Image (cartoon, rainbow, N blue to C red; front, top):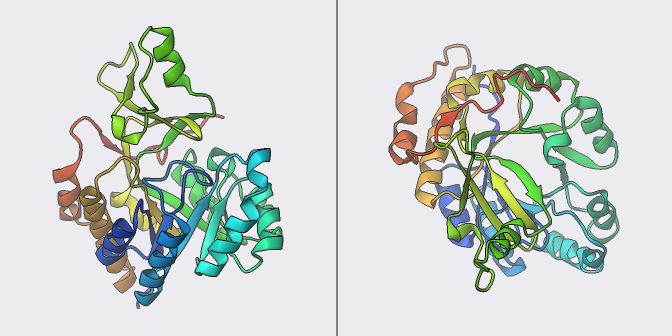
Length: 311
């Protein structure tokens, strides 16, 4: 007997990426611009988003927009018009963390669906359900939760659950320009603002020289990313059996060719499970395309899925 298929969600940094990811098997794409959303693979204007929505809806896919920035007083003035523009473009939902976004959407774009993404603080079903009473229809589960915590959370949720299953994670964020300040202190001031995602900067700990932590700056401040990539494909069936609604593949700082291979691999697993849940078995060959393109300096790991978390 066939089962219900969870959604496969992938951030896209351009119209072209959105089209290619949907063509590869993504059910939804996450887009946005740096002014309102953080840690996106690229920026999409309202015009771009309108194009993506048309293509996605023509191919039975969805479009979500990241509005997860730390909202400043200055941003409050422009926020309602932006949300109204997203609603007119026909986007399927927005991701938010700041209640200011929820309030602005309630008055300027009441038709928008809301996905609560509070990064590391979405750690229990009671808080998620609280935001459900305020209008959120989905919670983006904290990446620091382990498998037992996630699986145990699902039956108590009154909203959908989204879980990251692949890619790097953000481990530190500051609104300050830490790299620019450091390089200036070192007597090596940066020309212009070339400290973004394309610069290829990384940190190395003295005790662990073999691990590199990508770091970049943009208008939202400084972002430090994990030294490894989550890959839970081998145990994806545990999350599917638990009833997780959406699986996110993180595409940040990855070439589109790599992300497409990841999408194809997870698509195979999802289709196989949906076709025959009881007879489902993971196939090692699904990982071949990913391993072929995986950065040799970045390990594929289970992230926090099998770690005992201490807060």
